[in-house]
Length: 52
Image 1 (cartoon, rainbow, N blue to C red):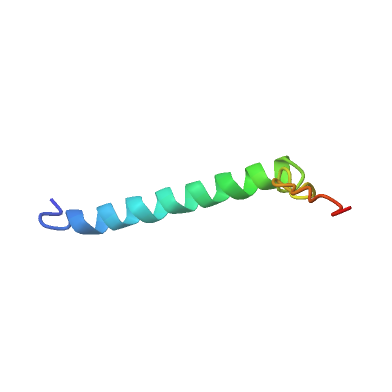
Image 2: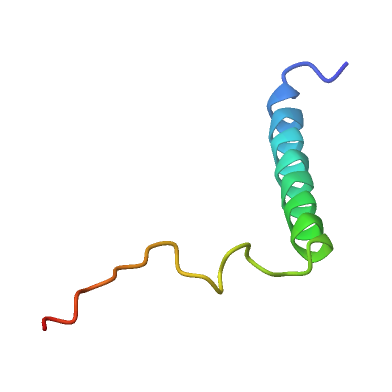
């Protein structure tokens, strides 16, 4: 019945999928406490000699 109107449904599906991924990402971020894991600790430590 809709004929050649399938392109609009594809765009709507992509938009709904993108919104779903965004909501899932925000939910996970808030569920984990909103902290980035390991943000307080440096990943690389360089120990230099005293030079004595």
